[in-house]
Length: 65
Image (cartoon, rainbow, N blue to C red; front, top):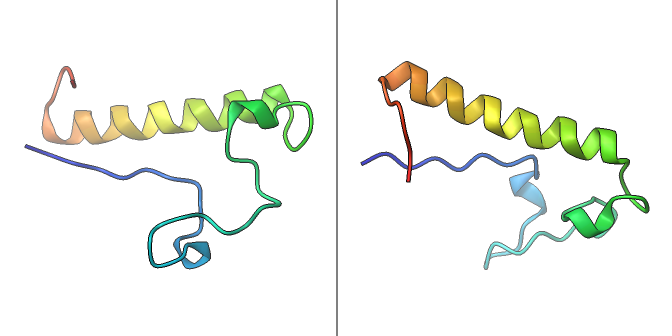
């Protein structure tokens, strides 16, 4: 079984428990309109999907669960 962690967040900005500490960075859809535009949000989400598709193509997977 394969496992990936794909994230836009700087790992150096996490505490020992994994909590993200940069409160200026947008982290959720609820930040659309205040910290991030809908266009930038959707662009970043598409980048996640593209990364997953690339991983899947590389190892020959056609579906994930």
